[in-house]
Image (tube, helix red, strand yellow):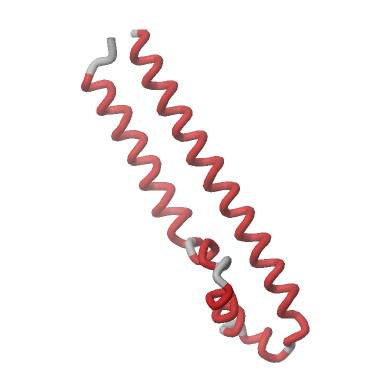
Length: 97
């Protein structure tokens, strides 16, 4: 039987891990999620000083930013999946105790 205090403790640890991940990693890179919006991508690239001087590099910069976005989304999914799996395994172990 799973004790309530164990379940709450595991949930608090899971929540703290997610909050730390958001604070230390995700919040500084949240702009990458917005890059799929064409207007935000144009606005972001127009703010880069070296792109104004060389418009021929715009497509390369768009591809680079979308590659960074894909990597960011992949790492977020991996972290959330791993943290949730550990949380569920900890609950399963708590049930077995």
